[in-house]
Amino acid sequence: MTQGGVRRRGAELEASLLEAAWEELAAVGYARLTMEGVAARARTGKQVLYRRWGNRAELVVAALRHRTGSIVDRIPDTGTLRDDVLTLLRRMVRRQHDVSPDVIHGLLAEVPEMNPEFFTVMREAMTAVLRQAADRGELTLDALPARVVTLPADLLRNEIFFAREPIAENTLLEIVDDVFLPLVRATAGGTSDR
Amino acid sequence: MTQGGVRRRGAELEASLLEAAWEELAAVGYARLTMEGVAARARTGKQVLYRRWGNRAELVVAALRHRTGSIVDRIPDTGTLRDDVLTLLRRMVRRQHDVSPDVIHGLLAEVPEMNPEFFTVMREAMTAVLRQAADRGELTLDALPARVVTLPADLLRNEIFFAREPIAENTLLEIVDDVFLPLVRATAGGTSDR
DNA sequence: AGCCGTTAGAGACGGTCCGTCTCTAACGAC
DNA sequence: GTCGTTAGAGACGGACCGTCTCTAACGGCT
Image (cartoon, rainbow over all chains, first blue to last red; front, top):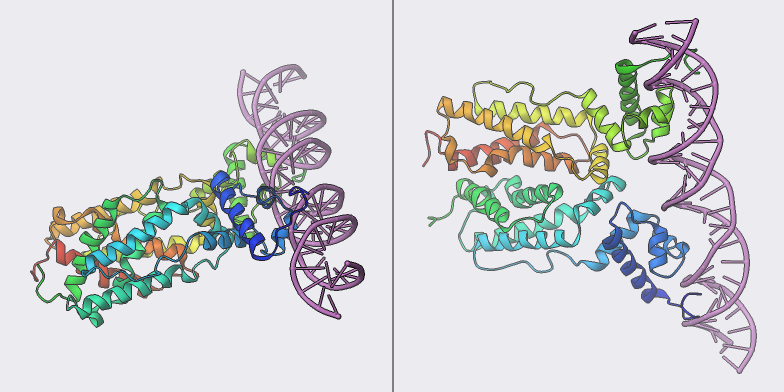
């Protein structure tokens, strides 16, 4: 009886548990996060956790979802393809700031099916952004190979996964200006370019 | 005394240990590989392992190194940039066939400093291959942004890490023909366009 | 207001594996 | 043949897992 007889229930309790998991993650990292640790931090017992999530990985995934919203709640529309793509990449970076590589690697090692929205979400956002650009006449959509569409996200993801330090803004600029845009212009040829 | 009094020593013993680790890896995967399991398979005690490697991760890394050689023992020289790059990518894929994502994720989760040669090796090979192409007059080397050089390896690595199935040959062709070569031609100008 | 079903909170439990430690005897060097 | 090293074997305490058990607080129902 750590609460002096006051018991949390339902959604309120669940939120407490997920926040405790999030704090524990920040405090000790994924590798040393234990169910016992989270339970203690939430001032409850392990069983309360196991009633909701089958294991560490499920709990952490739920905690992440509870904390960080979707990257693509709204599709950027700045007026140029360049800035739209940069905006999307910056959101990925901000997400990385919250969720360290440590956590990603740990999760990937424990749950093999970790790519539900992970890929598709960014592909859909990129498709939308490219369609806007096509409507403005910046490029011809159907000339673009599928792999080019996911290119910026793929490159940045690669960077994030092996980064020891936070991603530099300059990296994003390189991805967009040295790789993505030249390639788009070369294959889906712009109207006249600058 | 499982060996009837015959004791292995030095290099011979070490090779036995590493092979046992390799077999155990193939048998149960990284997640369920235990020091006790490897010791039992090698018909020895745990202490013999701990005298040589500090933990599971070190042992596995040593086992991988002992088993699989370097990707770039020899730089390909087929006569065209396209085939040279494809050759390098195919070697990466073959490597992936030996070392499952399961192992990579496990190692990355346990040892943060997993990228010593991991990156640099492929960059050096790509640089060499590009220099050959430049010598043949296929392109102008110094016009190529650094990020373009590592592009094929970065993309393939991204693919390997999240792949549930072995990489299709077609994926390699897309990377080279839809992304890399068009970009090289666009920025480091070949003989023809622009 | 009082009963009743659910479940929070707490911890015991057996099990696995970790990494350390201890001991004996096989082996290589001299 | 003697001696130092270390392979081989397993015991050990510790951490954490996931399950199970128990009590009592709480919400819903009549």
